Length: 295
Image (cartoon, rainbow, N blue to C red; front, side, top):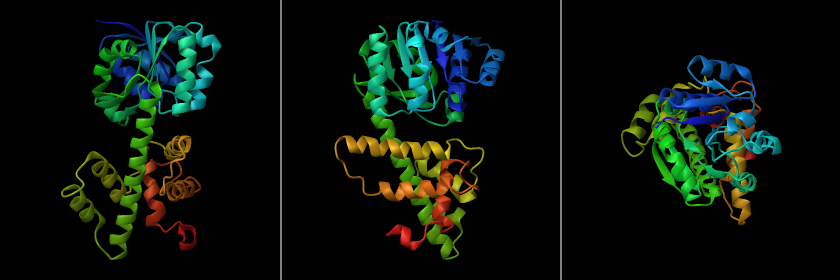
């Protein structure tokens, strides 16, 4: 059944997701703070929404905005006065922001679903995302037919929207460890003259055959970090989100300070700061952090 949908936030991920919905035959009203992504989607069959309010004024709307600040700025009182039905926030935001936003949408009389995703823009374009969903049962059910267009599986995390955001933070925390583990192990073999590509093949054809090691292993072995599929700054943001979640319950994450130093060093390096977050592996490979920093 074809539907009228609003979609807000057309970065690389959002644009790929909105395009999938257009290709599925839905009428997608798109809005973005900068116009060029909107122009591209309109050429592909979407409808231009003149404002965030207009995009929210449909029975169901989706958003893929950059972070907490972007979400809370866009979803102001003016925009929420027009909201209708169910809103699905697919961004990687903090659980605390999800709490605030779900309350604001509820006060506006709308359902709110947190549904962050796993996958890069090419995965989104192919409709192969993993979608982590949490919220009111009826609201999630309303969104499910669209999740089926966007992803290959929807993972349910219950009725508290923040739970999906916690799960996404934890997944990305694992990915940061994968990137760092690859950087460290590659540095070990490189220091002894072993071919990194051969070692990466060993990893992915023996004990570490999953997508994370396969995709990031190939990227790091070949040092192919541009164009970025996920920006370095977003990786640093996700480490901050992990720290905030841990702080809620006084949880100690022993490796977190070391990982934060790696990303701080990467962001200070002009050569890799604008690259894919996999380039954080270069901090160790290039010995950017000295022995004194590691203590």
